[in-house]
Image (cartoon, rainbow, N blue to C red; front, side):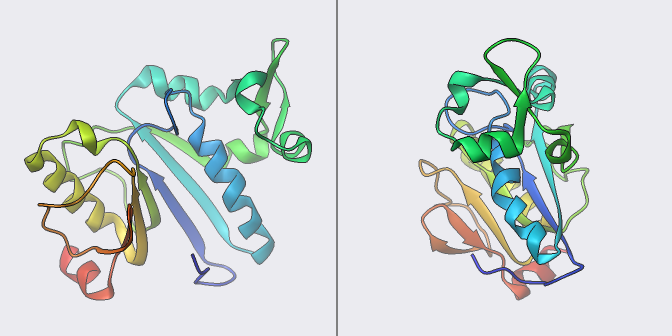
Length: 189
């Protein structure tokens, strides 16, 4: 993905649906997103992540930012030390405060658009959520996300999900990656 906007522009990333990646709902995705976006700091870009879920219990766990060491084994030692510090218990690590300030956690029910947050977002991650929705709900969710995406912004969905049968102006650029066009963004507003 090419970096657009340059210095001084704020980048906004939305994680709509579980603030996680993979099989468990523990808040693991958003620090991962923050780590991947951290390199943009060197370009002088201000960035923020909005992580959402319908469950307040899941949000509280994600916001605590505490991970068992076993969950972090895939990180290089330098990454571990840069983004995490020793946790409150033995064999745990906590996301460093500098990273935590970049992530806001909010409750959101995806099936009731319009969504209360303001766009536009540069990227929206909505992965492995829509597989649980019927066609009518998926249509509402996609339209709600289209309204939040900046022209040239990206929607990333899970690999097991598809937008077939959903009316959208988003253009698929790769499986599970969609682009908001300039014209589509104007219509959605």
